[in-house]
Every structure is written in structure tokens, then in C-alpha cells.
Image 1 (cartoon, rainbow, N blue to C red):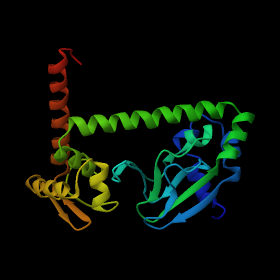
Image 2: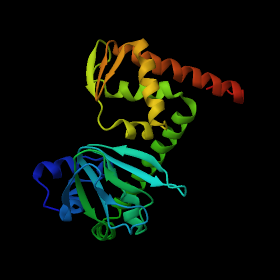
Image 3: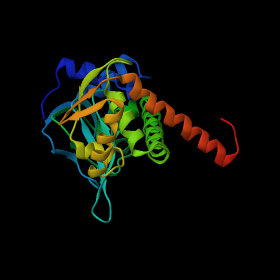
Image 4: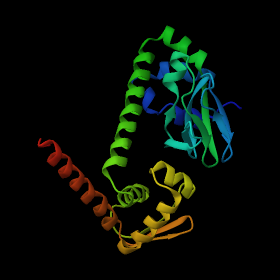
Length: 244
């Protein structure tokens, strides 16, 4: 680990957890921060380890996953620049409920748990910010579960790719941010199912070439996602008999 650069601290200070804090409080929280550069596959912590810190992604991608009793890997989330994780468990002094490892080369700011606790004692508003952040993480997980249950594999992949497109219409070429096995895990698919979905998306002008994806018409890809949301909402209303 090394001392963070001014750019690292600037990026870290802008995360959602700190949005309700004043600059003095943020500066105090970051006073003992260090930074670590990770290679793909390198772990930050493992499921069941004592929570010693919380983390902020500066560059790259970091995946959170759990190992099931059967020994399978279940991807919970994939985080990138400006996202934080493990703040709640560091705050209460528990154990990490999942493993965190780099999906790509990544740079991560590390804030020691004992320092967070000391800061909370000095400035109770920090605790409220941590609680709000935990609520946001839970909300995202609930949304992801809803997405996996309401959308087909085709729609999940279409939404993932649409989110990577920098423009709302026209054509573009994008690069997959991490390997296809991890993409499949994040979207609740098997790798072979992901390959079949990529093949089906050719009919809407999406051509996957290794790690590059050529989208001939972004608006058509986004329309595919939107139409599925409408169908899913209508199906839900039909089951419960309650309008939106």
C-alpha cells in the first residue's frame, strides 16, 4: 500500500457515502487512507475475514462474490470508479459477507475500520451517511434481483450493453469492461447462455468481436430493453390486479 495522490483523494471525496458531509468531515475520514494497485484476480479480502477497512474504487473494476455451500461462485456486484463498498461492515466491526477481487487492473483507496469508528465518535453525522449508503446498496441489490426475475437473458444483456454505449442513438463501438465469464455471472447467466444471447443480438445489429462490440443502432438496442420493461410491468399488474 502507498499514500494516495491528490487525484486519488479528490476522486474518493466525491463518492455517494460522503455526499451529506461537509469538506472538513470528508478530509478527516480520508486522513488515514492508503491506496493499493491490484492485478486481475488479486483479492482485497475474503468471505469471512474480519472487516478491517472499507474501500473506494478509483480506477478499474472490482467484483464482489460469495461461494455457495456447493462451491459455486455467485457474483453479487461489480464496482467501478467512484463506487465504495464494505463501509457498513467496517462500521459495525463484523466480518466480510463476500469476497472482493479485482476483475481488471484496479486502483483502490483503503480506509481503516478503526479510523472510521473513531471518526464516527467525533462526528456522528458520518454514521448517518453510512446508514444511507447501506440503504442505497440494498436498494441496488433489490433492483438487481427484480431485473433477473423479470427480464429474459436477452433483455439483461441488451441492457448491459446499452449502458456501455456513450450515445443514445446512431452507431458505436464499445469494449467489454471485463471478461465474458464475469459478465455472465453478473447477469445471472451461464457462459454458454451468454454466447447464445450474443448470437441472437446480431438480429438487432449487435456484433460481438472478442472484447469489442459494434452496435449499428443504439436506439434499437435501447428500444429492446424498454419494450421488455413495459411487458414485465404489464405482466406484474395482471398477476396482482393492481394498476401501477
